[in-house]
Amino acid sequence: MADSEKSSGKLKWLVIALLFVMTIAITGMGVYLFLGKGDAGTEQAAVPAPIEAPTPLFVKIAPFTVNLTGDDAAASRLLYLGLSLRVGDETTQTLLTDRMPQIRSRLLMLLSGKSAQELTTPEGKAKLAEDIKALFDKPLSEPQPALALQEVLFTEFIVQ
Picture 1 (cartoon, one colour):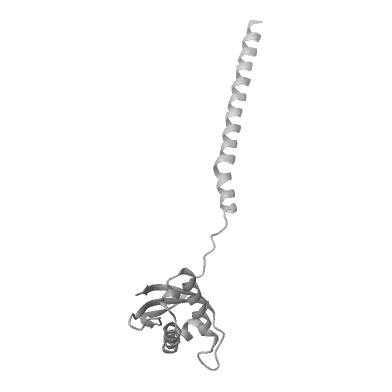
Picture 2: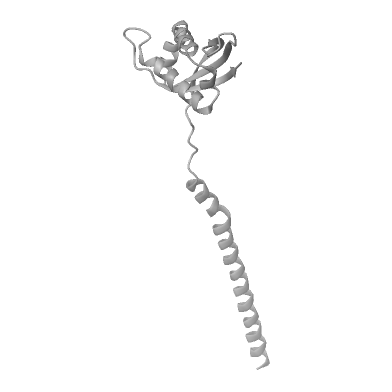
């Protein structure tokens, strides 16, 4: 009877040890699957590829100085202006670059009719940008493809 109690006690400890080892193994597998390798795959699938913005195209117009109109002829006012035009396609960029003397002439004519009081306010600058865009309503050449002029950007602006 003592042998049967010894073997039943050993069997009991063997079953407990086996359950303990199985619990550790299952816990280890769960940790590996849920926290390890399993998360890395779902994170990669969940993160979309970043969207790249298209490179903007600009046409730089070299700075120039213009006499402004004013009430007092003795107090001559000057505008020193540099600007760039943001365009939507390479065709527009090429056309504007090739026709730069015409563009500068149109700009000089437009700006020489402005007064210093108009141009020193933020509203005056916004209006000037719209007036510059309107200069391109009249074609630079015949026939002319549609211009994709998006924005007038002032890079230098001094009224003296």
